[in-house]
Image 1 (tube, one colour):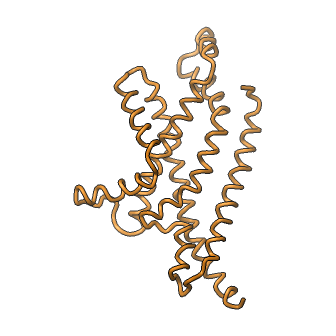
Image 2 (cartoon, rainbow, N blue to C red):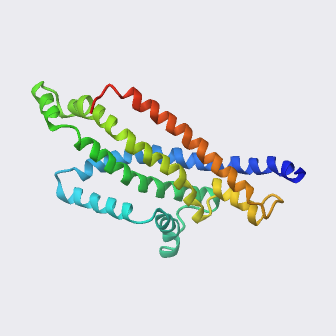
Length: 229
């Protein structure tokens, strides 16, 4: 028992460091993937067939292949094929490569959610906007966008909660995120080895994080309840 109490602050210090990396990857992924996904959705709905065909193909490939494989390819491909490690060495390089992989992956998923939300708004409402003399830009922001947001919140919240858990995949390229920090105490970290109990605390971190997000998205849905779709 005394050993456990002595190890507890050491473990939590390591887990906090790992969680900060997880949180940073989560935030940067959202900041990059949310706008990029919207751009991709516009491209996939473009009337210019070569552009829409190209984007749909890219989205199909990214959504159809494991994120773990994408992480490995993005991190190792430049160094192996071009003999140029563009990401740099150390934790910072691994983090940048992870962020790029996550942004591309989730932007493709978000683009399909955006597309479904935009196309789900009745065409008649857009036509009504034209009758009222609104421009295409005004129709999008004043008619389509508001209703699209209401439609996409539930599927978007599911993807974002999945993102929290998917950040653990970054450990495949040795990025020291939350699970990496917890698992390290099995093999030896900071003078502690052969301990599995730190992994149970990593689960608590994820549960609390996802619980906060679930409450947040629930409040957002209530605020958007004035749209009866």
